[in-house]
Image (cartoon, rainbow, N blue to C red; front, side):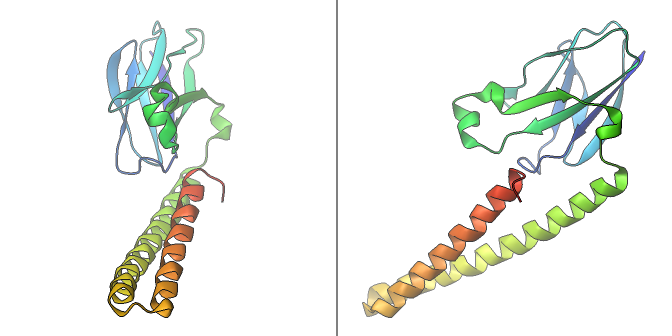
Length: 171
């Protein structure tokens, strides 16, 4: 038997688990910001991961190594979902020393939840403000209310752009 360590840190699919398959058989699932350890047969040939309809390219396993460390990455690019579904999920071999510690993972989760909660609340507030100002602008036909509607729309755009950048790891 050999140990297979699979880690996932992406924020693209926060609520869904990625299924791990070895030689086409399901051995378990990996959640957001989780490091999973699996015992697999030494003679196992390949591994890939699956999320709903998307499946990664298979990655060959080395039978001479007792421990393999892999990193799962989910793309946040919607083009990959529809045009290149095989690029949506990627599996990389990494060194164990390159994986974050449990404390770093917990800090990452806490920070992500905090930012996601605040961002969701702000988008909701600006969304309500946008709908209200648009309603008043249409019935009052006032340039000031149209400007306020545009300002609310711009703030929604900026917040959602920041969320997308954070999901891609650009911030």
